[in-house]
Length: 148
Image (cartoon, rainbow, N blue to C red; front, side, top):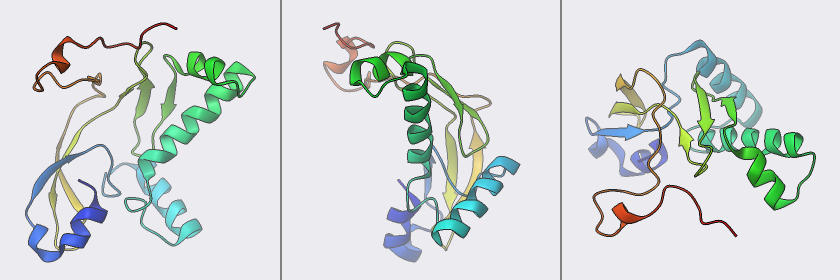
C-alpha cells in the first residue's frame, strides 16, 4: 500500500503496519538527497508520484545504452542482471532470468500524515519471487519466461 492510498484513507490509517518497497521516509543520505531533489523539481511527494518508477526508468535507460538500440528484444536481453542505485540508497538488481527486481523490503507503521515510520527492513535486497507459492497453481509456474 502506498502513502497515496493511506493519505486517502486519512487518520483511520494511523498505526496500520504494512510492507513497502520504497518510502520517502527511508533514512539514508541517498534517499534524503533524492527526496529533496524530487520535491524541488516537481513540488510533489515522491511516494505519490512513483519513486519506484524512477529506478525502472533508470534501468531502461541503462539497458538501451548497453544494447545500443531501442529494439525491444535487445533491450530485454540487456536488462538481465543489471544493477543500479535505487532512490532509497541501496543497489537494486534485475534478475537475470525473470527480470523481477531484487530489493529490500521495508515494514512501516503509518503516521497520522500518511507517511511511514520504518520499523524494520531486510538487511539486504532479497530475490523476488515472480509467482506466489500461496496461490494454487502459481507454485508450478516457471521463474523465467518461455523462450520465443
